[in-house]
Length: 82
Image 1 (cartoon, one colour):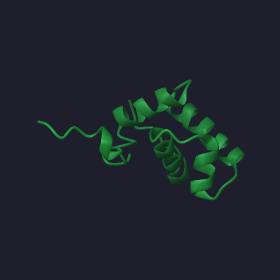
Image 2: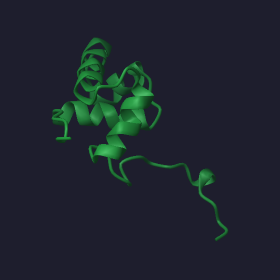
Image 3: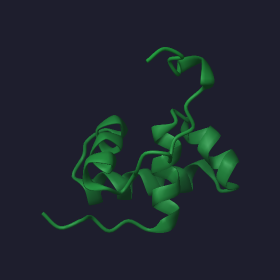
Image 4: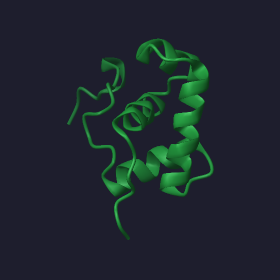
């Protein structure tokens, strides 16, 4: 399988989705309209062959579009024990 091609803007929106941001939160962060975020999400779904953003995020990691460190994990979720 070849690696899907998504634009840098789409990759940014995919990272936002991986962080759990809504369309409106992603639009605010990226200084674009919510409709543009929706358009990017649709293109991401098509490029990755996913039907939902959760699946697109999982595929993003699996295919190397997303990598560890792309998502900020709240400190309260990080185990302090081995």
